[in-house]
Structures are given as C-alpha cells and as structure tokens.
Image 1 (cartoon, rainbow, N blue to C red):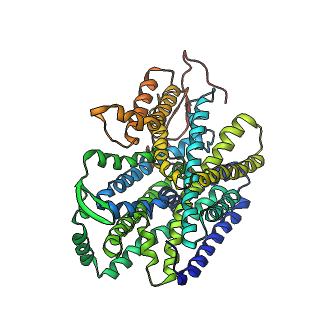
Image 2: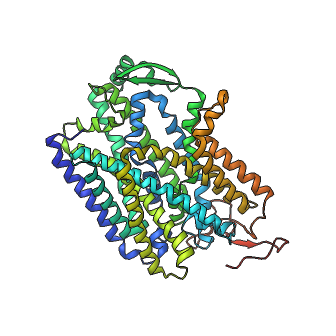
Image 3: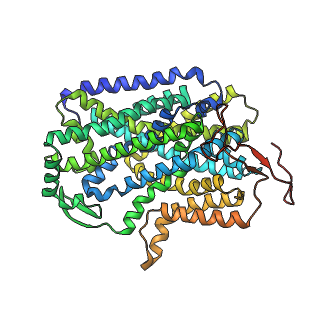
Length: 533
C-alpha cells in the first residue's frame, strides 16, 4: 500500500525529522556514557515519566498499530482479551516487581543485567545461572531485533516504494547509530518522545474516524449492519474473502490463552531494565500510574481503529493488519498522515532498540567481562558494549534479510519463552528468601523447554489436547520446577534480604515501612562459608 503522490513529500520530511532527532539524542548523551553502568542503565537516573513511557513504548512495538487493530478488524472485540491481559500484567509488574527489582539489583553488586543479578542473588560461583540466562536473553532478544528490523524494513519499503532491502538497511543504520552512541539514556529518552507520539496517534486517528462517520451512533449502526458479532466479546467473528460471517463462541481456552499474554511481563528483560534504571523506588508509584494510563488509552485507541476500519473502509482489506495504515492514508491532510505513519515506525523502533541494547549489554557484561576480559576498565567495557550493539545488529540484520516476514511468526514464542523462563524465577527470587540456585536453574530450563516443545507436546495428548498458548504450560512448569527444586535441592544463599533500598538519601517507606535494605549474612551453617565477593 504505497502513499499517494501528494503524501510522499510530507511523510518523507516528517520521517527525516524524526530520524535526525533520534540520532541527535545519541549524540547528546554520548558524553554521559563514560562508564559501563551509564551505558547499560543510565546510572539509574530515569525519572518517573521517562521510565514509564520507555517501558510501555518498548513493550508495545508495531503490534499496537498493526497486530491489535488487525485482529479486531478481522475477529471483532473478542480479540481484545489479550489487551485486558496486557493491562493486568503491566499493573502487576509495576506493583510487585519494579520496587524490589530496582532495590535488589543495586544491592547485588550493582548488577546491570538480569543474568548478573541472578548470579549474585543465588551466590553462584559456577556461573552456570549467568551463562544459561544470558544465552536465553541474547538469542531471544536478537530474534526480537530481527523481527523489528523486518517490520520496519517492510513498512518503509512499502510506503515509499523503495523495496524491503533498502528500507531494512535504513531502519537498521539509524537504530544502531543512536543506540551505540548514547546507550540506555539515549534509547529511553527517545522513547519518551516516541511514546508520546504513539499515544497521540492512537487517540487521534479514532477521533478523526468517528468524526468522519458522524459520531458513535453511526459507527455502531455500521458495525451492526456489516457484522453484528464484532461487538460481542464472547465470540470471534469469521473473516474470509473480504466478508464477515457469523461469530463463533470464543471458548474458555481461547480467552485464557489471550489473557495469559499478561504473564509474560514478569520475564521481559527489556521492560525489567526500565525498572532497574529508575532513579528511586519513590518514583515507581507515579511511573506505574503513568504507564498503566498510557497503556489503557493506547489499547483502547487500537481497538477503535479496528472497528472504524470495518465501518469506514469501502473495500475490505486482504491483510487486516494494514487497517491502521489504510485509514491513515485516506485522510485529506498529508501532514497528519505523515505524523500517524511515523508513529508506527516509532512503535517498531522503540521495541527493537530496547531489545538490541539488552542483548548487547548482556553480551558485553555476561560473556566478555565475565569470562574473557575480567579486568576490563569501564572505558573499555563501554566500547565493548558499543561493538556488541553493532555485532548483534548485524546478526539480526542477516536474519531479517534471509527470513523476511517469516521471522515475525517467532515473536509469540519469544515472548512466551522470556515470560516462562524468567518470570517465575524472578518473582520467587524477589519474594522467597529460601529459593535456591537449583530451583532457579531448573525453573528457567523447564519454562524455556516447555515453550519450545509445547507445539509438539500438546498434539500428543490426544483427546486431552488443550490448544493453550505456550505461555500457560510454560509458566506452570517453571513455577512447579522452581518450587520443587528450590524446596528440596541445595541450600539457600548465605545472605538474605532485610527490606527495601533507601535511595536518594531518604528512608524508603514505599514497600516495607521503614526497614533498611541490606544484605544480611546468615549464621554460618553446615553448608559452607560465605563466598568471597
């Protein structure tokens, strides 16, 4: 779906300004990335607003403007159960994971990656936990980056008629430039701008569409006349050959599978990094309110876009995921069209650059520094991290170039893989003091393997086949394995947690009253001495 001739110049100009602004953010924060902690987590200086928008913008990706509106366009509001699950998961993640993770990672030798935190939390001298978790992070994050590059390349190539390869190359070059230059601060700060643009677009396009239709009444009338079942959350409308058919009952399994997407939040490294980088646990309640409000507005807008597409587009779409672009390009003002389309690129880029930075940071910290260059200076580590950004991006570029849109199909498994491998283990590490290294390792492996093999396991169940999204059995298997091995295999760490981390020189009362955060050594027991730090 190429742009009209009158739209090309405005869209290109807006896209050019957007691109230059991203590169400028990398240059602006270049001088602030002299240490590895600054490059990886911005020295934990994100304010509440930036942390909230960065977390949500990096979460949503192009799915906000392509996937969700397309699902609603094809299946009706029965497809919105996934949005309900995401809102619940986001709130719970901010409420229960963010405060403790922010506190624990700083105390755990100022860990800047999830893998380093797990090694410190469970005092793993063998470094098996760090190696396994880092490998999972790098592999799945690189796939995510490849998916983002593929989506960006296809969108740029389709809009401007330049072809996939050229669009992919431009998209990748811009993202690598500002990510390598400015690190975490540049990426997160750009997200505050991109997140604002995304939520405005998700709000503006439905308002314009409803206004063009004459109000909510005409919208509902048009939907009822075309496909009455699209407004039924308990049904899924059929869509084939450009026609909407009768709705079929959604079923409990489908609803649970969609809601289960919210479970993935507890194990997504690129979102958890925003919790680790916020300036203080005092800022988390404000960030939570901002982030959840942003998400509700954005998801509501995306759902309305799918419904407006059904009512307003004269010719049904062969590809439902293009409904946002179709509505944007039919607007009379090319400048508004330009802003709305750049919002899609911003959404795709905000997730891809987060995954790129997480993968590169893990490669530099969890492999290069941990095993190859243990005495590396901060300055050397920063340059290693910058080189890792380029290296990971090249691998992702090659995957995207060879696979095209096929790599997009892997994203659902990557989300489930992260959520199952890390989610239960992370929650138990934050809330169960007696959790052991054996529990963490088996939980992580069980979750990842269950997700990877579920599509082969489920059919073997015969009449008991569930059809569940792999996230559900993955989380259950990881939790069961972590609890079982954590309770009966190995010993708890020699140190325990005594409360929240006071930050900014203030007593933190936001989690456990007035307790002070610190690692407390246990009385030395039969299972050994304190490990040397």
